[in-house]
Image (cartoon, rainbow, N blue to C red; front, side, top):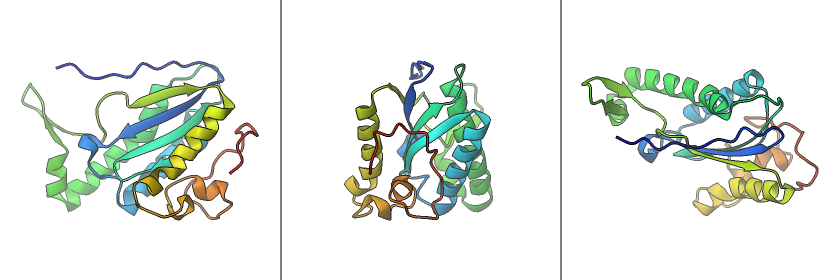
Length: 187
């Protein structure tokens, strides 16, 4: 079976627009508990993998994140692994204890007869290098409008799991942004 992969360009100085989805686009990020696990994991990953976080939104079945590595030698795949792996592990552990029905939805039967549980969609997701300030503005606005376009809220600041609240000056927020974004973005 061919597995879809994502080519990554680890270019020093570039920001990265990242998108990753839940397995089979199931709404596995629809609970506050799971969203909290993800923002905690992002926060920890940014310290470990040394990247600045400029924007994010967590939707029920996927997440968008805008990051900028602080070091010249970096690996976006490692950053994503640090963000996603702890969430998948916690969620599957939780489901083993609390919901066999949902756990079955995450079960993958492998060709060798073994089974695995998969929280995240296989493949590399989406990764786009961003170098233009105008593109940064459009990406951040796209992230913030995502819950509005889906009809989940009327205004971007009403969605708790987004950096829109941080940019609007609302505090406290689940996840603080780094203030290293070029001064071209005014919300």
